[in-house]
Length: 138
Image (cartoon, rainbow, N blue to C red; front, side, top):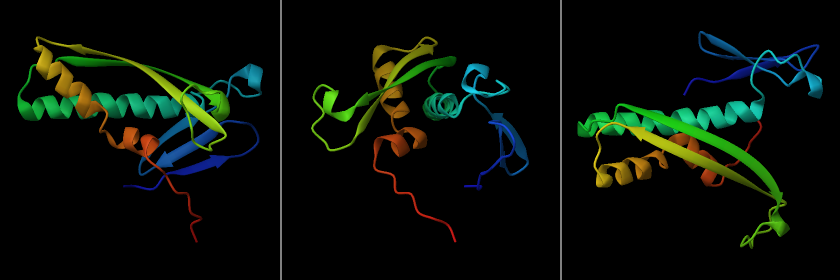
């Protein structure tokens, strides 16, 4: 995977670069930013949603199923770990991601179920779902 670099200078606008592509992240004006790009959290949800949709489409193409399009809506909310119903871990916070996925095309019910299952196997979903370890680069 190509490395990603982020540069932040005088304001809260972050320039993100990977290979020949460059894009921006920022904060809203009311949070001290200039609102020239999505927030980092919005980018995270965008990465997740696009990964889910692309994974679903690639799977359907491989199976030659008539998936014509995918719409993914995502929201995220943070809760105190001790306040989250049913959570028994020691984490200080639990992040709940709510999703709504709409599949377009003349798919039967078993195809829809399988495509939804495959969407949860996308690389970004797995990175968020399973433990991730951060290490300092030298």
